[in-house]
Length: 384
Image (cartoon, rainbow, N blue to C red; front, top):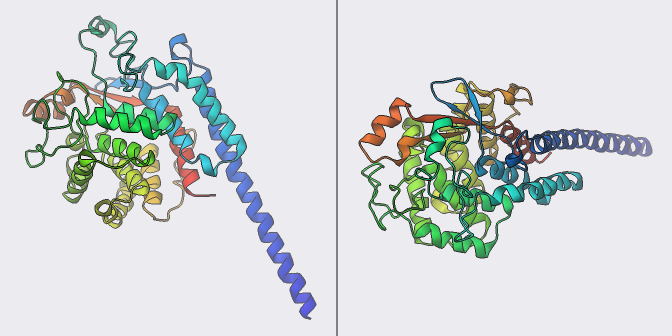
């Protein structure tokens, strides 16, 4: 009898191991399939200057026409999203990711500042460009070229691999343009405008611009690089905490984070930083952020929005099934912009608030490769 029971237990145990192996293989195959889709998008660019990039598009807010973009932003984000869990990956996944990174290096270099060889621009620097394929707008490529910015600098370093010495150099460069140096901040809430935090633009002619989501990306880069946080980092973390406590990311998303502009996207940024950070004041907000993410997920209408919130819930320690409306096909639909270019962001108040609300100078950005990289990120977080 005992021998029979032992045999039964061994059989059940062996069957469960087999079943777990099958599930694991199924998830792995799904992840590899997503990576191959992303990889194919990178190598099938129709324009030579875009070789090595992951395609992205922009749309004027009051139009339905998509225009091909040429920016470092989405290519760097894709590389970071698929590479951040490299220590947990199968060799087949790693080989795809390393090949994608290698293919992107020449492309990314077009956006690097050739004077300091450190910072990056959203659009190509060599030569300077604004709104690629923008028709008459491109007559102003040199005159209206944007300054380098801390968002693209942080994201690109995260994509290429966080190096502590480069991160420290970036930290110093970013800090040289912080709020309170050179000029005051006249484009943010009066209650917070004197905080000595990072300003988005790395240029003395640009107005001070504070964006909650951008701050999380810079702090994420510093955290991943394991460099000591300085006074500007701490001030920026405290501002993030105070803005979240006052629910600005829910009640005023287009103002508190004009470059991302949607509550679900902002929450995704904060949740990602909280996942990697150990800053006590931010950690204390995780239960509140989780509750907010769960509530927003009940109202989310778009597959990409659902995916961002689903991933945020996982980041914050919650448990939730993968959203049923999210798949490779639904993520192709361009109905929820992850990034927004709003020329109002370079204005001071009160003009910023007025123009921002009108959406008259707003462009929405989309990238299928990026959307797929978010799906891959979600599956990796599930640890399956």
